[in-house]
Length: 483
Image 1 (spheres, rainbow, N blue to C red):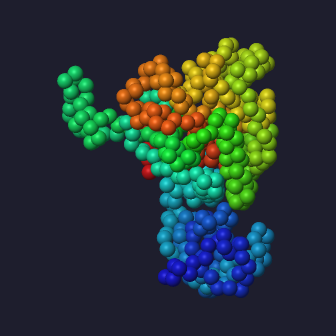
Image 2 (cartoon, rainbow, N blue to C red):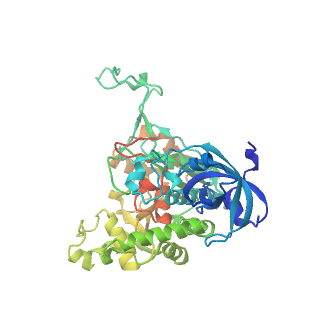
Image 3 (cartoon, rainbow, N blue to C red):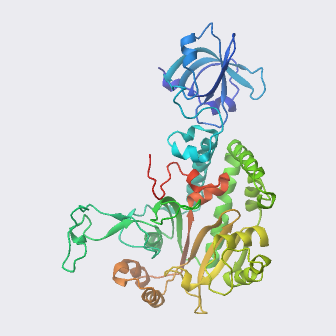
């Protein structure tokens, strides 16, 4: 078979291989034929571009050519020649074609036509073979690589935090339970509740919602760390922004204050987006055109002002606006949008929890730049955020992007043991369950900060896709755990 001699299509297009004999392997996207020749568009996933294979029926049998239908997998050996047609500089004149895997054209669901994203979600095991999803997942890979490169180059250490945990970092309670107990015959304790002492871990455990708390422990020893792993929320939400299983990037830094945290987050976001711009040009150009076509179908007042690539460059090239929650509330409360009741959730008082519509108004209408919001009311933020001296706010920050709203959430962490335990009592979080977390405040406490970035939201922003289910290979949502 000589699989080791295979050349990827990306390499063929990047190099001048005219006159060389090579072997390509990939999947048929389209085939058209006339009496004299067949033209096969082959794609192997290495690049969005298909590569043209020219098959002469005098060299390739009719039986083989008949099986070169859309979706079939081929091994093609031949000579690279200059292309006579427009679109690419070279093509492969086939000497031999071997069918590695057939695809019945009557049954293969991905025919050469435009399929809806909803239809493609139902066949997520095949959708990566389309141009759109091939582009999305190549960009996703580049973004993930950029994340690791950014932190590695700056001396951060990558920490694997547990997926199974006994703590709820966010205090929201929307967690998936992990158990080996027989659900048809649950053991009971003396009080009539479930006896978790008979479970595998001898206590109640769940899938994690965040690696932050464990990340803080590592930062207290290694200085600067980051996590990048799966997290889970059992939130019964079917919006275009929610998944039950998603990936989080969570750096934690010792000796950082709130301003250091903001500076790092802004620099990190710009770096990762710029990496995609520099390394995913063909895929982003395709996705840019796709987004532009979608915008044309919208009413004029709903269309985005910037194209996808323009938007990405805009974020990279502009300083983020920084303002406090209090300043944001004043802007929103006094806006014509609020006065004319165009917000679904009207802003009438300080302390309101901002919705996506408010966040996007600040970014897209008022400032027309990414925004870092700081110093939120403590009542609407997590227990671990450092309390400001005004007694009302915490040193939190959210970064808001156009089209997305919040993309990053973080804070300076509360390092003062007395303030932290007081806040936990106010929020009814048992100290005994987090004794290990409190130990970091008892022994060698120091100012520290961190943030979380939902990776799928970043991929959503960079690819211009409209639904978060379309930027993760196999989405997990209420009622859906296929594939």
